[in-house]
Image: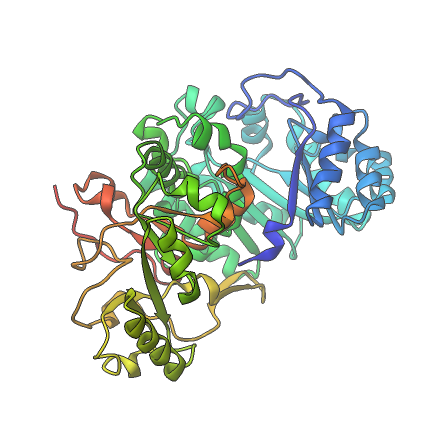
Length: 499
């Protein structure tokens, strides 16, 4: 897990802006500024839950009358990284830049949406904004404010992404910076004016800009862009899944409280798709009292309520068997073996479960370390699974950004040739178990109301994604799909959709 992304606090200062971008997500401009009292409150709340990275955004955060005070207050209460995302117009004024630098601003992300003044000013509908953004970058550099850039992708600039990167690199002369490509969320001006980019053009352009970034040692993230639109071999430039989990928390009302199914075309362009649909399906199963299982710490208060939702309880310790039985659950026990845990200990636990009469099986997670043990559990029920890379991968920032399998053990599907029952695999590629829906009681309060952030963090660790062709497959509603970080390591495998 990329802990630093969990510790980010994003605070909106209002909807007002001193530009008028054609593709803007914000269709409304009121209120221009949110209450300073509420903004200070959000800054404190984030810090209290452990956030050490504050992002002030809008609208245009820098035009808020109390922007400098927000920055200085955040520094005072212990934020280590204080960032704003800006069109750069205010930062083209040197006196303003000096003031926010003294207050404690550590990073500014400047938006550049084209490589020429004519195109950029046309997209922002603000004459002179390209020149101001370019001056802003120089001013931030002089004030020792860390600099990054972003570009909002639309059909109007989708083929110019490499040119923008070259402008920053060669014309402005910046060799050390981060670059964020912001995909087109299906809302606001981009959606209303039908400015969503063609998938094939986007994939072509992402290949060019990713190649340029890696060749020139530029750290580059692509956000709000479904992983299906990434060219093979560059999927690791997609932002960490934790960032998307933050987005889901922000959309909580429509995801959990009042589940809303968007039109399918919107889902094509929505990065929250891997979390939104499964969560909405989970909510439906909760309402229907038809979950596949319950798991987590079995407290009596929660067990009484949870019993209405499922007959089955996945116990995490054999010691929980008796208490779960008291509430008429059918307990079952999964023993995980991935080669990183001790074989003898796993075998002893399986023998203990067998002797106790518990319904159990060994989930054998296939990888380079575990494959030597494939025939050593022959006296016990076993189900094979790919190893979820999530806990083994880590981002490294040597020149550009790379995702590395730190265990050097994760295998692509082509290397998994074991016969037997499988789970956590695409159903068109393996004869495997259907996707299971359950809840972990640790993510819910005593009344079984979800704790949003705990729920989102657990969901992040089990991210599942699907190739575009999967969305027309009859198996999709029950298909486990691909682990998210598997695709970042190996790309999508060739799927065989069933009509």
